[in-house]
Image (cartoon, rainbow, N blue to C red; front, side):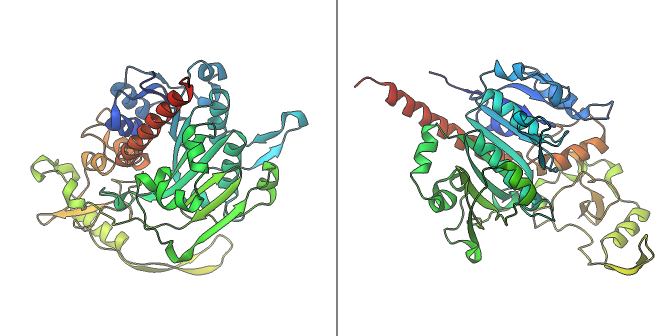
Length: 416
């Protein structure tokens, strides 16, 4: 009997998915292949970090579009994971009609589709920014609908949830959409299809069982729609207002606005290093203190657009420093720079940046995980990373599903 899942990690960064899955069960989640490539950059800091921590797998530092289908056909992949960019997913009919639909070149979702198509894993777990549900602004929901229809055509059921990491025991208010797709032929899928979609979204689904929600739908925001069969029609004409939680089965979509049950955040102050460990370079000088006071303060400035139109730019004020009794704000790739979004903490009367180690802690990485690179890139990589605690929780659920799946298959194959 198979006792682990073969995992492929795409757009791996510094390994957030793998850190979380291996924390759930290092032996059960067997990552056999990973890809990380930063285009137009000579230095491949994220890949070097990943490779240093995970030398046992095949780690690829090539453009994923240039990796052959055969690479994935021969792997017997069970689970594909990855955090991919939010891009324009519009499609067009190819010049040669028999080739069907073609996605815009360079869009990494189509590489996910290609890999899934040739390897057909049992499970797919993806992460993206939550604005994916609303893009593009002129045709709301089109891009996500194309994704759902793509997975429908590949034979998968899809669940999704926008999760604020701070609601489930972390120190960062980071909202991201997670997408879990599973093969319709699995016993787990068959069991799910016997339930109502409301039961799945509020109680028994992948996300509801991992991240409990209140059983009352937030402000009654609950919608259903059937996706057009033709993806080209979706690309050209379809729009829909998706809510933060939902499921798609055979093109039928049910989406609702759910709320976390008993949110339990960790204060920012709990993840700070002891001040005796903080290098002097992270403390603000007088010039920086003055600059941040301006950046974080309220503004009302008259500006002129390129066409000569005058307008008032206004911006509300924010706390001069980040409150230590609250979870941190969403960390961006600009963390650690002189930028309004950068966290500034005040400890023992002194103001400072978060250290790279504290940023690693905000995302649930071990201390000094990114010590293979300079401070600027350490901040950048953590701004790009996901919260590994969430992946750990999902890993436990996937392991439970697979254990039940194995038992179901064993029962089906037993002679009467």
